[in-house]
Length: 197
Image 1 (tube, one colour):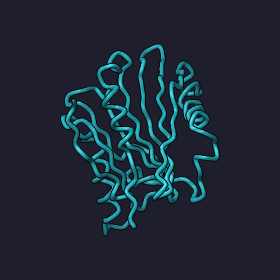
Image 2 (cartoon, helix red, strand yellow):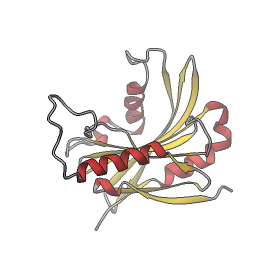
Image 3 (cartoon, helix red, strand yellow):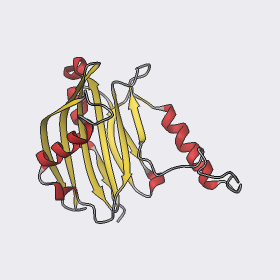
Image 4 (cartoon, helix red, strand yellow):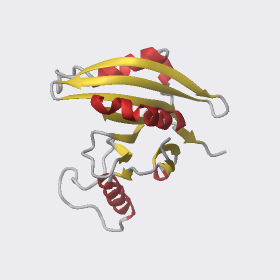
């Protein structure tokens, strides 16, 4: 049985989520450095540069991982990450339909884009977990993503609350799936928002 560590994340975004991940996994240092740089820019007392246009060092409203973990020394193909995106306050995942409908919407955004026309995605399973106390619905998706250069197996969980879309995504090369399957489902099933009362 794997040993897990508990992680409490996303505090800097006026919201938080938690999930478990393998205790021997390490944090992605690039994400940590980017968060430190962004916090320093937000606290800076220096005036913005006097150049025209936007400064490349100023934070933009771009969604990217706010936390990511993987085995030490790995190349990033095996990892878990959390992304928090800003959405309209009235955004509702339920408006897309049930879990399978939500899964198909997500996979359409991944596969066959103009930028990556050779990527295909296949939904394997989709389920809904409800937190009736905090009124949060968690959509768990299991899917494969394939291209001529890779084959990956993913388990993702997404939920929305207060103008934020939270997504946990765990991915592994298809060849490693059997050895990490139990860990991936444990991470996905443990993912939850921490709601302040």
